[in-house]
Length: 129
Figure 1 (cartoon, rainbow, N blue to C red):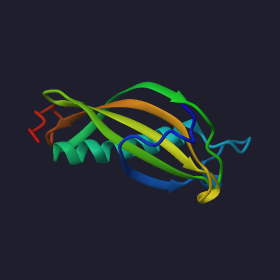
Figure 2: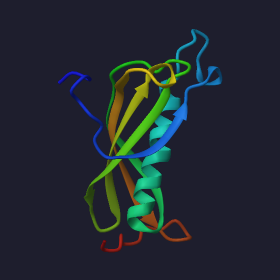
Figure 3: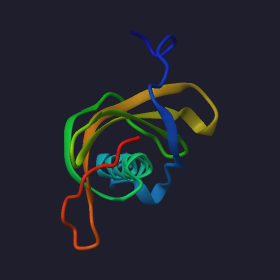
């Protein structure tokens, strides 16, 4: 499916601009910066679903499709794709608005797993919706 017909899946959870400080020596945005933005967004989505403190326990199936450039707005979309006893799987997609307001392209996606925890960091059940 092409970007022209594909649309983001999930709820827009985070938007931020890629800045020169987020680049490597070659001027490319670090994949780790994109990953950290996705982790922030996923933590927001999981925390809202659980209404509890959550921690990231895994990242699965991370696929970098296109680069993010300085000046792009990174838009991160999240959707809950599964809830277990103490864990939640969050589908996360990152899209870039080229040059802040131009073409929208999907740059990466992944599945993150979060666990709800108590104040001591021990897993606790995710409450029903």
